[in-house]
Length: 72
Length: 378
Image (cartoon, rainbow over all chains, first blue to last red; front, top):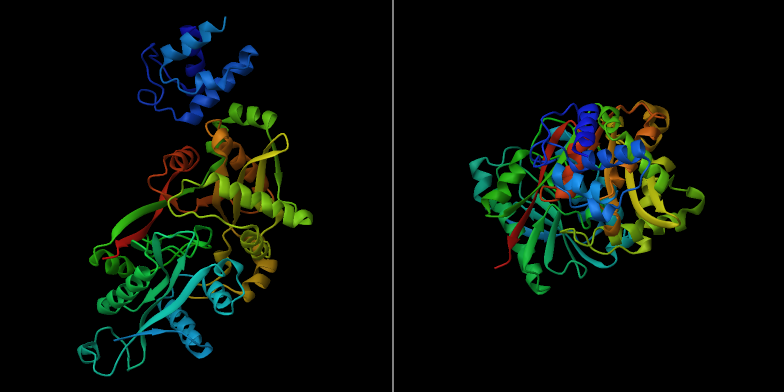
């Protein structure tokens, strides 16, 4: 899952050096709308609908991966 | 110096003439409040029915030291106005006595101090704990004194005033409540970044402009959303349907229906955005905005270059999904019918993290600063 997220962030925002502990806001400078947009891109690409209540409080790449893996 | 209440038509005319002369001599800003003050004096505005309104002036007296000192400058004589304001109180905002529509000559801090002192005395009668300077009766009509960029003309409904107004209140020991606006030359460029989010929101929510054929019904939606969205706002207080019906009726003399968009979740209104072209581009610095500009707008309104986003609101349970981005996208689609290529936002309280984060996402830069002043009543 980490690779999927790395690829998305590189394609959309040209961001590299993504690790599980990377924080969307603090380390990548992404605002809350960038994060929501990333979720929407993931949903479109993989034809899923994610639960807003679950992803609302995610701060790091690792937390996002953990949530997405729990959906399998 | 003498504290005088403008208690009859003649004195109200003097009150209005003072600000007219002030704007003309400064020749920097458009007076967007002259018409509203006329309506307040003529008791035409519903929203002031629930308020106590006192048009107050500080007049020069024969034996005042400043007549000899030559300050303030100008050919002054006894009976001339040094500064003025509307002192206002409403039970809906019981903590505050308001000093609204403040105007003053330069170099007369004693006159301003007397005005503030008298406002405090009136506030005490209503058990107010603070004086607030820079609120225009209700936030829907304006908030703040200009606190930067004094050389730039004000956009429609934004304050324009010289720097020394702020210095008067700072020197009286007032606390400063900061606000700022934002500006962007390339709104579409910013929104393109959120294309996937906008696609999703457009699938989940319906958006439509105000419908003048259902004016009363749509006006009520605006009031209900305002009252629900802004309960935590520092100076907002409850509006009734007639207040906003009256305000929107006047705005729609200039605006088209696509200046107010609603967002719906099914049939439920959940958010809105209000914008309009910067009508001050139709006026010259120093003018009072009024009837003349209604006709100028008919001829030249299509040439206005800047769009002014006045306010947006989203119900609390729908925050966090990005609706302001989709509402802004609706505005940008509409702008293709206008020549507006730039966007200026209205004031935003500096501590309003949600609104500031939206503006930082879709604008190029912070723009003008504004200030509201508060002073405890001793």
